[in-house]
Image (cartoon, rainbow, N blue to C red; front, side):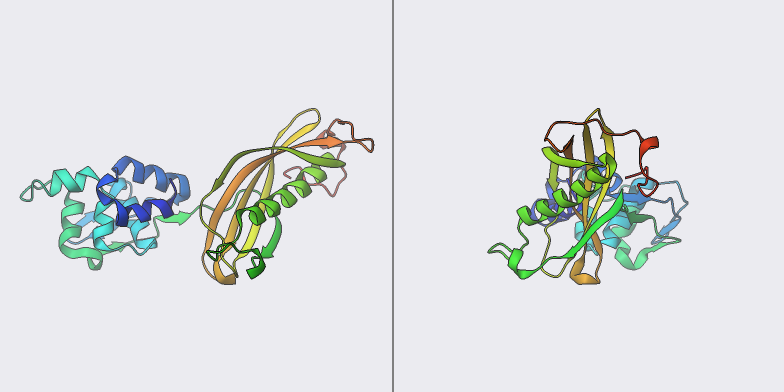
Length: 248
């Protein structure tokens, strides 16, 4: 599940949200820094009540309403608190119900979106000609940009012609819109005798200057070929020209 789909659940099916799922989504997509935070009349030291810290930070970053934020606590909110209104447990939930966002203060940012992994290989702007009838950029266009960047990365590492032979783990996370700057990041994750696997991540800068978001990722598999179209061994790192960086 992505942060986008989780946020959609707070509107379409809030009763289905589980606390553990929320934390797994946050862990997968954000870097966490323990932070002191105040919630109404409750002060939480850094490293304590980290589930609450992560959820409030996530909700604050994504500008969620008080109701949507409470839904992220799952059964702790729905059962432990709502079904026992006079209880004294789950102080952070109960304080947030009373004070809302005006009571939340962090000593430092607790969450930051994870940065791209790999080298920025290509960058382009999504244009109107590449949209589907709904106005979103065609997935095939994004895929072609990924294949192009992956081919550049694999070709530099192999120092010869390479061909795409497979695609694994393709996952569209968020749509690409007209005007977004699409940056494609690549890194070699496996080198065989004549084959290479390239991890590819696509990130967009919304409307050219807006927030950066990860939109898709996949692993592209290539085979290195000689001038006759036969597979050829990929050179060792020590045999590469000086201008080829080892982390490609």
